[in-house]
Length: 283
Length: 283
View: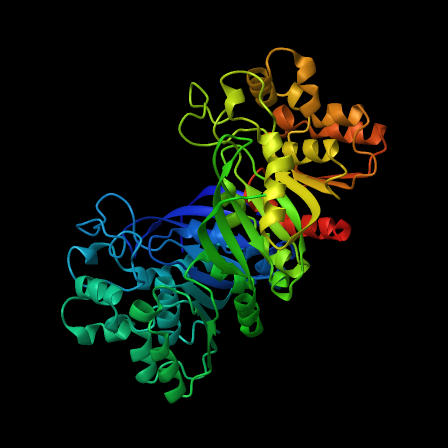
């Protein structure tokens, strides 16, 4: 595999390195940016496992890099963090015609679009599941042991991707995930545009539908949801996840966190527990 | 004391609360914003000590609130964090005539200006030393035990203020502080404008000059400086601090951190050690 990576920045952090790269993505047909944190253990010649982090609507890789405090625990636990962007970017990449925040740029939803104009770039599913891990494992001192986590739209992405690829991820976690996008306004808007009107096409990307269809048996799952999250009732539908996971007897812990909201203040508060959770299952 | 505080936001964080307030400052003659983190220990009726954090050029209270990860350790150690803005703000507040980042808005330098037009609002020294602590100790469940820390311009502010008021602060620390502003371009520009041409007026706000004049005996001091900091040689002049502290036999630990730069990635890496340092001396 031949890849061309352009280093954008490198910052020493917790005796490891936080680095930002640009590269050409073939899945997305555009230039993409991602960040990676390499913990100090790589200096000892150790190939470390990777936790992939999928961010929420409007984010880039920077939000998690700057605000979650995750590198502190990645350094202690010997984990690399890989933090992709949330959509294709750049000239010629379609955006919401009214410039809304919840479709188009910053809102890739981690699915492969089938409808024009979205289908020429919006293949975030292939990028996250295949292209980016292949690149990362080719270039950096990391193993092929992977976990995946994310927030909100990225929590949807993490759960949905891990359920469909439980051979590729040893565990999954999420903060305030959109768990049932086929039944919430954010999901209905984007799936209708990216995938078309046939709702049966949507189900392959819906966490609750995937669980109901039998996916996720034996996969360790941890979800934290703030009880004061203003998106909880209309968009996130956490109780639907709890019901489906119980019915299918999944290995899922779903916690309501009293008084916490949808912000990075919430994620910073629990990221340590999430990384310790993943570390248990990563070789 | 009667104060009017307007709550701007409140976020649950590490079982405590991160809150942002607006209030009228008499020292600065304008409306000001600050943030406060209250750790979970206040729920037990405990009055907690306070670590004041002074930010660097161009910052508001948000940079440290979002990026340093300090609340994790404040929650564990039972410390409140108070994070003021870096200058007066609003209509009628003078700014650099050319809009430069290093004077005027975002660049109060924590001193009392004597020269027009700066002297009608730029009294950050009085605000930080007197007005803000009086307000905080009147309104919030905190004790009168204080420590102070800061970054770059705020590291200058923290050291200078603690040296001049060692009865009011039990310890001081700094990240990449401007330690000898009378001898560096940032300090010469701002002191010349805020204080006038008489350089003898500048010395009262210069850490190295204050140490040479005998201030700081018995005050615990911790300073971290990244060795890869691009401002080190011309602006920060850390070696001048080391020499003065050694000559005066101060209780100062000044550490060069190999490979670290001037960013929040650096501060996030060492904030735990700084808060543990302060906690030792706070009742």
